[in-house]
Amino acid sequence: MGEIKVSPDYNWFRSTVPLKKIIVDDDDSKVWSLYDAGPRSIRCPLIFLPPVSGTADVFFRQILALTGWGYRVIALQYPVYWDHLEFCDGFRKLLDHLQLDKVHLFGASLGGFLAQKFAEYTHKSPRVHSLILCNSFSDTSIFNQTWTANSFWLMPAFMLKKIVLGNFSSGPVDPVMADAIDFMVDRLESLGQSELASRLTLNCQNSYVEPHKIRDIPVTIMDVFDQSALSTEAKEEMYKLYPNARRAHLKTGGNFPYLCRSAEVNLYVQIHLLQFRGTKYAAIDPSMVSAEELEVQKGGLNVSGQDEP
Image (cartoon, rainbow, N blue to C red):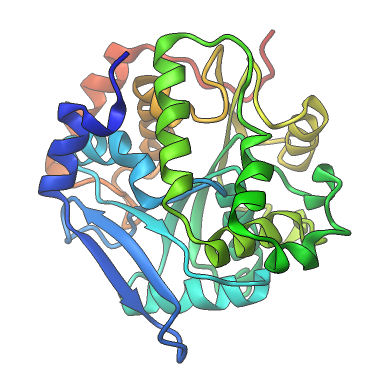
């Protein structure tokens, strides 16, 4: 079984896309780590926000494919923030630092929840032009951990890792999904105690999305039909919250479809972004549009506004 971290694609990514570290808060310990790839002329790029266990490089397959098609893509890793307001304020400062007025956000699990909270936080002066929510949720109470959220900071790293690993798929999976899980376990091991504790706190701290503040934002909900950490109830709640959202369903993909079903995920991302073609909010270099359209048509994937069996 080939490991992702020793694959040619991953090594090519690490050798060609530099990891940047940026401090935007007064506290020097709060460091944003990010990969920024694709044409700098694009002023409304697609930004990827990782799950609790993820680092910025878990989206390397999206970065390689989408930048090859002419998109500007940023994948980032959060500093240690202990509440949603603090995160939103820090993220706003990061966008200011990068001189980005508006962005498209792709959030996986916790990343999707934070993307929604940031859209809500900036609704009076919008910074989010669209959302792609992958295996995500709108209310932290689904995890039944709100009562422990304030004690994660006290727990040792091994205990925090055990909590996160408990949500990873334990049943039989195909080799590609097994590689994705191995890679995410490896990324999890690279996170320190405070990073993990703060992410779990953000994941479980009592909070929910206020849909009336973000109802005008175009949304694609991306989820899987096989086993994932997200319950059916949580998925249904997302559909109710965003009745006009496009739905991108993957038959399989588990918790990490962007790693193990990357071709499908990348095409769904392209289909989502096609609606902004020809506007100042396009995330793609206009000269690349025809090649990109060809790829999407060739993929022939279906994104609908209706639920599918």
